[in-house]
Length: 316
Image (tube, one colour):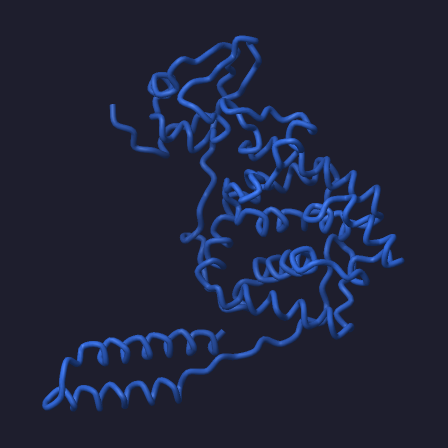
């Protein structure tokens, strides 16, 4: 987008003018520098433009139409498109991470019959990072401890499978399918991921409406679907929104082999060395291992991922 490039160049000019002004210490000969800086600043203000983005007139989530002909829906959609388009650094990071992690998430969604669009829900939940929210929701899919345990994940100080991308994606699929069966649409299932199935169902009854776009919801849940839709639109059409990125810029998922473990590991650093890697690399590929050892008195079967040779330069 030529207009976006011009805007970014103008920002650089304004910053340069600010540097000139901050360098001026007094009067006399420095007044000339002030005048020059002022000229640059005036020119920058004259050249700097911020451009609106054309309204989107056709959009769907999981095959369900977004009613963009309604004025409030159009405004809410426009807000999220603008916010995410002009947060350029974050947009680039999301594109790079999506290239790395979507190939892991997509086949799991497909296997469970969950629409592919739900991969964008993971993006807005965590930015495709193993983050922990103030409420202690954890991992790419931001799963609470009780929910993780309810759906069969191991969650404790030693092993926390909410950090396991494949297993947590399986849990998200299970939750979303149940929400869809209860609430009647994939759009409402996505909203329930934020507000809870009971919370959405209660608002449907209270307001005597069944469709997400017809229900008045709180700020966070009211924006939730539109944030997903904005990320879907931008990541699907990055150049349309000014994001110029080539394959060589992308992050890639490192192939791994799985090592079966049904015993205790007293020192994961020693275990890593025996696998030809180090502790840091072991934890990068197995973030669900939360301590420096693996407690396993019950002899449970775990699969630890070890990166294939040739991707890391590990000292001997």
